[in-house]
Length: 394
Image 1: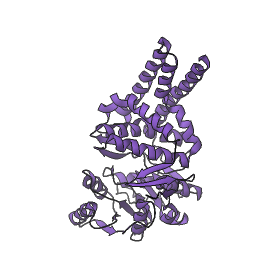
Image 2: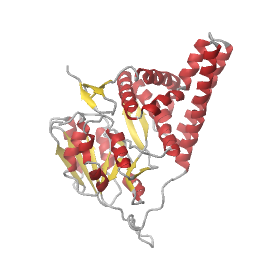
Image 3: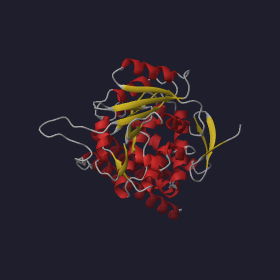
Image 4: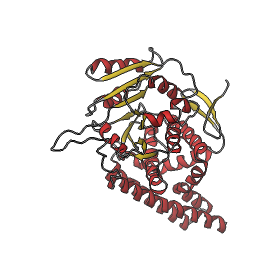
């Protein structure tokens, strides 16, 4: 038993070190712009107080279904302070409620370049990618930006994102995101997973190894880079299309840039079941894409490790001491980062649930190794070793 306790203690010390490192990386993310000044040959800035001129952008928005926040989310992409941009909404069929929402925006902003495309039934396992492939044919400009439907942005979003292309070698710019406006326990758990776990892990990856993947909150790519990887055809069978999109462009020889613009992911009223299903799907997909790093992510589950130490020690004073130390360190760092840097609307009041969220996250991490089946958009799939989706027969 002493050997087990010693191993658990060492594992927890690794987790505690990660808490501190991830907090430092997230703080550095906000403190350091990390963006080189725009190149005059690409981002043309007029001197003498003139208005900055930026290259035009096509925004692709695949949407489906009706969501209470969908109209406001989409409107935020339309109301941009940017000189030239096109927004294309892709909906599989006209009877989808999302089609009416998109048409409402088109009619409400006649001065904008807005278009609704009926993309038809999906012709691949990944419906989102099928949508994107159909929309791509209507794109006009050489910067193609994709963002998930639950994202909401400020009016300076496009101007901030495109600054990441200041170097000609950059083929893709991606944005981190924060969970906002949770209105239920399930949505609160999802928000905590993003703000206290995923977001810091992205900043750690940037600092330690650089960015070699994209995030669905924003994927802005040069058309030449997108075409070089085979366009959206190369992503049709992958569930983690955002990861694969960035990784394929990275492997094609382009640099990837993590923008300092943080996008809002509107959480709303998601149920706990939806949270659990989504996180398990994400975990099994991430395990297929990055098996080694996903396995090592177990070392970051400090609260679960401390709980195991408490159980193994027979609820001894030492066990309680370690468990309470973990809660104090983990929660104080997370709350500090949220209140001082992340500042996600509606999130801070739910940080009382962080220990339970951490225990649930550790359970989901363990369960992700027990199989490869996932549920996505009402259908069942198996994820193969390369992250491809194989539809399961009823």
